[in-house]
Length: 456
Image 1 (cartoon, rainbow, N blue to C red):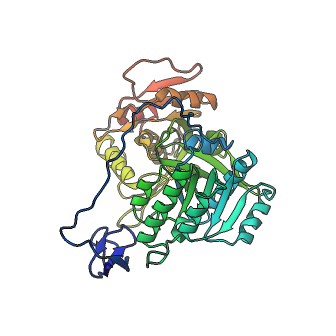
Image 2 (cartoon, one colour; image 1 turned 180 degrees about the vertical axis):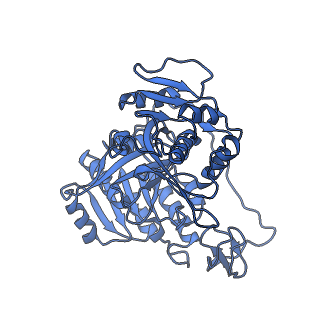
Image 3 (cartoon, rainbow, N blue to C red; image 1 turned 30 degrees about the horizontal axis):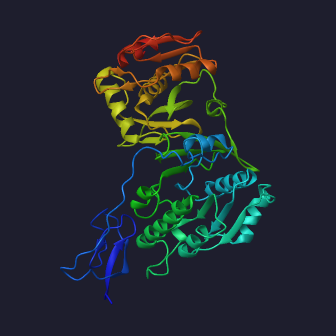
C-alpha cells in the first residue's frame, strides 16, 4: 500500500507545493494554500502496462442515428449554446451570487420536463423544500421534474448511470460536490476537479446533458481550478447589474457552436423572461439632445445590439483626476483620451472623466472607440450629438479610424430601430447602405471633431 504524503494546493490556480507558504508562487494570491493528502508516487523504475487503443474512421457509420439537440423552447438560451443542448455534453454556468443562475436552470429543466424529457435537479446548497418554494413562486410546481439533495458526486454519478436514466441534469453547485475517496474538503481544487471529472464521465457514458452551476471569485472568474473550464464542453457566464432588471447570458466557450453569443433576459416576478429585441430595451429610456450621449452599434456574437454610451467630463480639484468606467475597458479609455489630447488637442488632462454604458451592458470590442470618442467630444463642447445617429469604428494610436467586422449588420439594426444617420470608417469594399440611412465615412478623429462642429 502506497504511503500518503502531504502537499499544499492553491485554491485559486491549483499550484502545488511541498510546504506551506503565505503567497502562492503560481498566481500570487495570499492565504490560498491549503493542506491536502495525496498518494505517494509509484516506485521508481516501475512501468505502466497499457492496451492498444481502437481507432475509428472519421465518417459517421450508416447504422448510427444522427445526433439531435434538445431544444428548450427558450430561444435566448438555445441561441447561446448553439441551437439546443447536445446529449452527453457538460455545460458550466457561472455568475455572481443572486444573479439568477438557479432560477434560470430551474426554468430550463421544467421546460425540458414539459417537453417529455427526463430531468433531475441535484441541489447541494438548498433543501428540497427551498427548491419547491422557488418553483411555486415561479408557478412551475406542476412540472414533472425530479428533485434530490446530494453532495456525494459518486452517488450522483451512480444515479445517472442507473437503469432509469436522465436526459438533462443540473448540479447546483459543483463547489459543493465531493468524492469520499479524497480527504480534502468540498470546494478545494482536488475535490472540484475530481467531482467534475466523475460527473462528466458519467454523463457522457449515459448520454445525459449535465449543467454545472459554478461559483465565481471577487474578480468574476469561476472559482476552482482552471482545468474545470477545459473539462466541460460549454462555459457560460450569467451577467447583470442587480440595480437593473435584465440579465445577459454570454457564451465564452462552446464545442458545439459559436462563442461570444449573448442571450438577454428580463427579471420579472415569475422568473426570467426572454427579451427578443435587446436594442429596444437598452435604448428605452434614452433622451434626445443630451450632451455626452452617443449610440453605439455593437455586435455580440452574430447579433447586432445598439446601446447608449454616456460620458461626463468635468473639472477636477484633485491632483490625480478620476477615470471611472462602467461597462468598458478602463485601459482602453486611457488610450483613447491620450490620442484625443495628443492628436486632436481635446482638453482632457486635469479633468474627471466618467464613462457609463447605459443599462449595465458590458462592451468588449474595440469598435466602440468611435462612439466613446464622440461622447467625450460632446461632453467637452457641451453640444449634443446629431439626433438618430449611430457610431462605430476602431481608433488607432495615430488617430485614424479603422473599419470593423459586419458593418452591414450594424447598419441594418440601426435602420430597423428608426435611426437615419450613421458615422463609420471608410470600408475596403463598397456596399449599399440600407434604404433611408445616411452613412458618413470618417477617416480620422480630426475629421470627426470637424463633422461634429469643432471644439469651439
